[in-house]
Length: 101
Image 1 (spheres, helix red, strand yellow):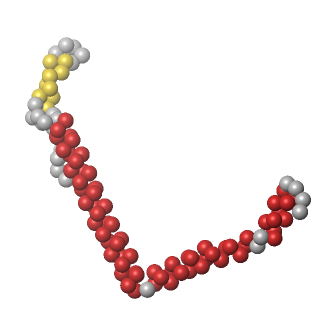
Image 2 (image 1 turned 120 degrees about the vertical axis):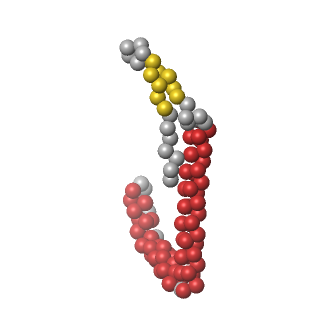
Image 3 (image 1 turned 135 degrees about the vertical axis):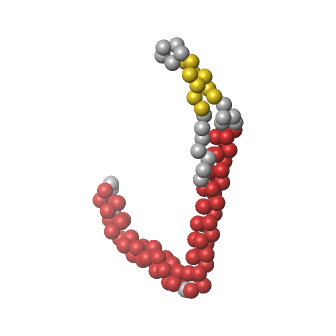
């Protein structure tokens, strides 16, 4: 057989690896035919629709949790903060949050 690359090339050439292409091609063809069946197609569409609804719920829950965190970190939205200007004068600012969705 030989040694090194010559041995590897000889083994690969005699293994008919190109025939293994038909395994994934067959799996793909089977999947396509399976998905063309009406009951399977309806089931896949149903799973997709449920996933869309669940993702929307998850996004809304995440937004609600974020809003809770904002409100917990700043419970007194109407409080005034007193600040010192560069000239040494005090001024106040009002904290405000837009909670509309």
